[in-house]
Image (cartoon, rainbow, N blue to C red; front, top):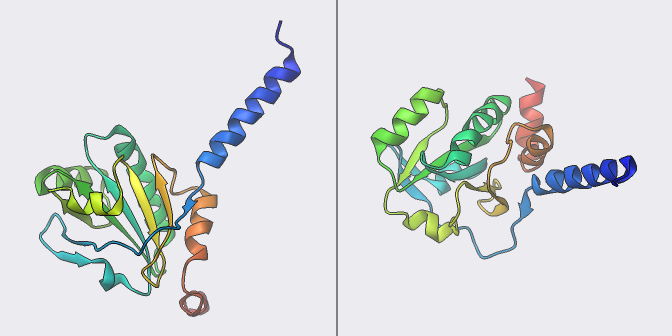
Length: 176
């Protein structure tokens, strides 16, 4: 017979394991790969154009259920970070502009949806499982990564993102 204490202990252990699994992983690998892609409207985006900002690069696809479930939390994070030097680049892997664009319109997403139709960019970033996300610091270096669905709007994750923001821009934004 299972005791109540054992069940409570096992439940707490499971919850703490889940909480740890929801933490971003520090990046300790080679330099940041190139990212030069068009968005669903045909506009060009280069990661280097966002130097000085924190960039969340999220690889996703519409056929990926965890990717679809994660998207609203990405939008909530974008809204929470409004006015700060932060941007989300959502890289759709292997699909076309119509499919990705229709999905973005349906969810009213306010961040660029980039197209990696031939999957070369995803492969160069090591995004072999979707969703895969990378937090790039203002200096252009990847600082953290995460594979799988994550609640990007959680306070813990938002604080981690904010910790990467350039300090001088943070001070001037809060003074206004």
